[in-house]
Length: 261
Image 1 (cartoon, rainbow, N blue to C red):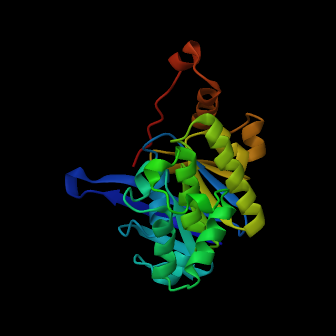
Image 2: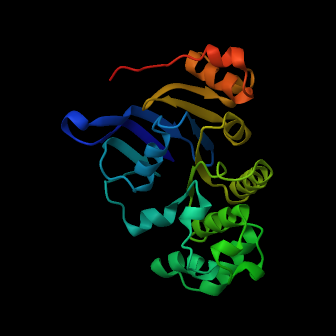
Image 3: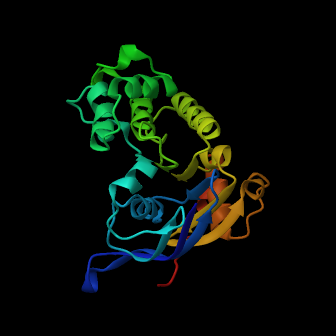
């Protein structure tokens, strides 16, 4: 469903240029959940921005559902590929009701049956019609993220790009949203790419995982390898140790894995 080959992204020019993504390549099968994990600044969200069409300054090859993607995507692409952002407090317009937020993509794509689609989308994410005319500030963080998921799903896409979809939520609410995403994936046979710095979240949802550090995929592994604590690269092992919890002895052994351009 998704193939990325030799992807490069550079921010800035001249002496101030910074390569955020360096020769990244991977493939995602239709109907699978593919994870990209790494610490902040590793380049994982930049990869998603290229896939979604938000970033148009890149080089390499991106193929989605058999079509090689240009820098600027058309309306049909955005119906097929939708993105759920990290921060539900920032991704929803504060002065728009849930009804207007969900109606906007339906209107843009001229799908019709706006009310029916809105009610169905709210039902699919576990929110009833009582939430239809509420504003974002009247919702909890988990409810806001459910609205963001509903907004992505209302166009009936085949691919969802998930950029740290639970990191801004409380732990108990994170589990609810992850279970919702898992259920939607199974019912709708969607293809996911999930970006996260949390290995537990990635292990819960993904079968294949790419580990990024400083713009490079340093290792691709199965979820079984991750759960068995048997990755090959020392950086991945370090991420695993860090995910267990704070340990002074382990913290003192942390290494800086610098990668040459």
